[in-house]
Image 1 (cartoon, rainbow, N blue to C red):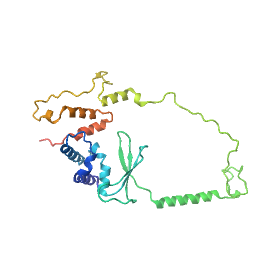
Image 2: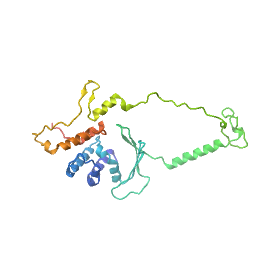
Image 3: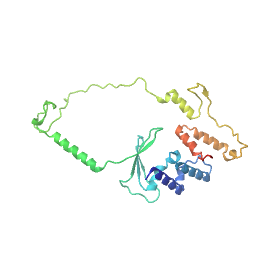
Image 4: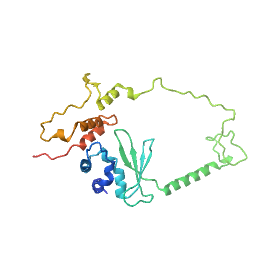
Length: 275
């Protein structure tokens, strides 16, 4: 199955099972259930275009893929607090546990998140490697004194009544030297760098000083509505409370630069220009 075919089938699956997946979408951007359903359809339309990735719907895609293909998905993540994520289908008939599940590797690097496919090494190959390793170990362990090379193997302490080669060990009264713990004088703290503090303030809408112009930038705030005479009646469709909620969610501390761009793409309709 090609990537384009998989994408179109996933979008079709999400449309057909809207009631099952609409609960995973945030309701803060909708006033009622009808508007939430419209936003859900717009998100799927955006996902239908190649090269476009939607944050709200991308969190649902692993589960949607498992339900559509009726296969378990195992995600090996680089996050230490959650290294293995098991995605089990929750739509349709339950799937029995087998070895044909889909395996993915998730590189959780901020700003460079990426999925890679995984292929498990066959057990037969592991057994062959293990058996060859055991054979090699047995051949090197059992040897006589006459078979020991004089140039490479130390002869002191090797002669004994046993036919096995004994590795020379340290004496019982040997004391290891005290290890010195080396540490830097100053601990590196990236969060306290001026440029990173400036980025955080700019991303959260706070006042900051520009690095290029050295001018102070005023904090972001919700301006009063200036489209009372607008023919589209924007002031009636979007009230002040909704405007403040959108402002707070957009300049939230957890909203990264990439999530803000995805937020804007969600609310932009692509239309063909006239010649």
